[in-house]
Image (cartoon, rainbow, N blue to C red; front, side, top):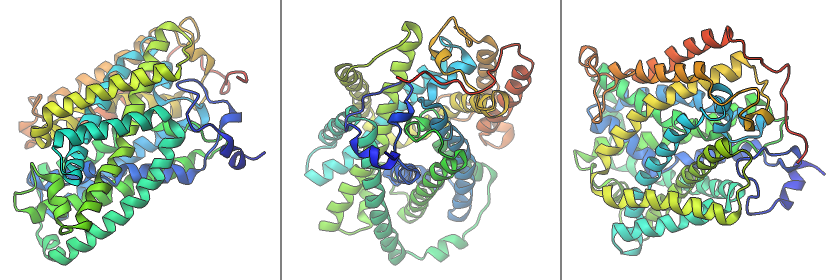
Length: 471
């Protein structure tokens, strides 16, 4: 029986969690990767991210160019992670045990959990605004409604997430087409594009906003490609995921750039209401409020599901093989979404400034992880992992891989002089005109260091990819 036909018999509720996916359970096609990431990016938080480039001082033309460059650079990084999924059949962060050790991988995974928590919380704020307007209730009530939906979809798991992604991509395309048509009828886009005041700080801010948006998907992107058949082309997986993510986010951020330029300072603090206001009122506005909330379902579910996978990965690293029951999955998800909802309720009135600082500060912790993981997979081991050994602290990869951990720590520390956020501003930022280039340093330095360290390491690399016996 073919993979395509056999996929119809797969259970709706996911049975596997962080375990290896046997070939007999593989299913799906590459187009679902494209639609998942297109739908995940055609949403309100991406609009707000694009708007920040203008709200914080950039002009329309150079903001769009900077955002596109950032999408392509960051999108390439995240899509390289996605290509690992079909080959390894594992969630992304478990593969970090090769670079950091079975116990040591918990270090970046804990930080990834915090990232998911923050993204879920910020997305819940915007969705709560939309549902509050749609149902005529408070933003806080809207936040609680949205959180309930996320719990349901996350518990159901992989297949339902992909179904939602397909629907969200269709809804998103329709909503964005309508919004762009309204925007074109209300403003002189050509005139906005003619205003060009280039500034390195504003330009690189736009690049950083888009790059950080894409790179932040890296720690969980393979979670959603790991069910594809093992023979799936890595190049095609890279292109499907990368194209969906880059196209979706660039379209959304472009809308945000134009909306912020038109808003004349009225965008911050009323992001959802302003975007929907482009459509007028009545039924069109109600449908847009629905599309905004529905569009956030995909990405917020990805964040919650990713949090569940990371927590399970941490526990399994110290306890050995871990089977997660459906009840345990529900408890994990309730705790994760509950924490994110509490943060959303407490921080909903200071969203925009906190969100900008949050996504930029994230780069300091995730670009070094991406650099180490990608250099190891593509240049050192060359896809030759011993998958069973990833669950054995006494096996090939050991408990703690000090060289990998050391390079990661250096990768974080070397960025500190170049970071510019509300949380922390490095001493070299002023000399660079206020430009934050930490993410560039965080990619290049640990990549070079890890390659030099790992190339001379005595750690044995398997002659081929070793997969578990049939389970």
